[in-house]
Image (cartoon, rainbow, N blue to C red; front, side, top):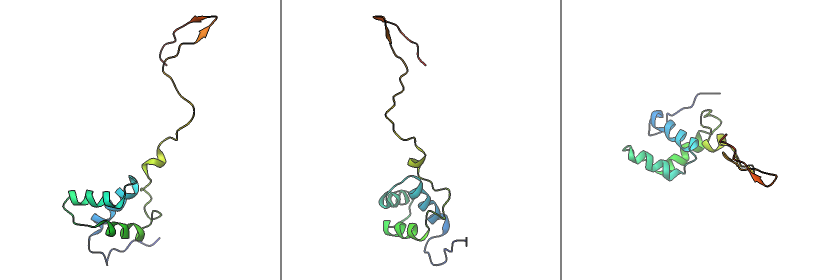
Length: 97
């Protein structure tokens, strides 16, 4: 894979790469990334961030796996810490797991 070329960009790679990483890693929208960059004193529009993301595909950013992809999926199974089973009409206490 050829290295990325930032020659025609207004901002240096030190600004572009973290902006794209934040967008892809935390599944934010472009306006959220624009606000994060504005908090750091950078006047970059969300359209610019969108253009950067389209130019540098997720295939090129191996470390940009979304957080939601690593989160466990919800299931129908519940795990309780304490339970009180009934046996022969008597209720017994079970300690925490």
